[in-house]
Amino acid sequence: MARYAYLYTERELEAWVDRIKRIEVQADKILVYFNNHARGQAMKNAQTLGGF
Figure 1: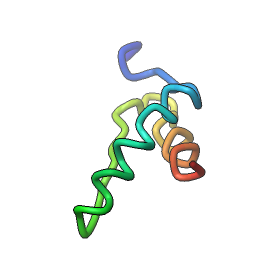
Figure 2: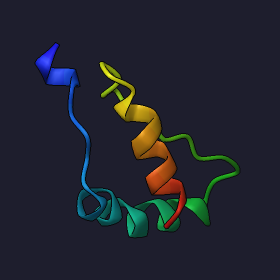
Figure 3: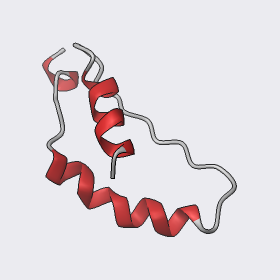
């Protein structure tokens, strides 16, 4: 369970923003999944990533 009990930092998530935006111009839809859900961290990280 410890493997999935991780909360990414804003800095870690921000590192993905440029890559996602480059893909976005070539795709109709982009889905980003988080697998760190042991204590609800996935939702928190998704909200943070969506704010960039």
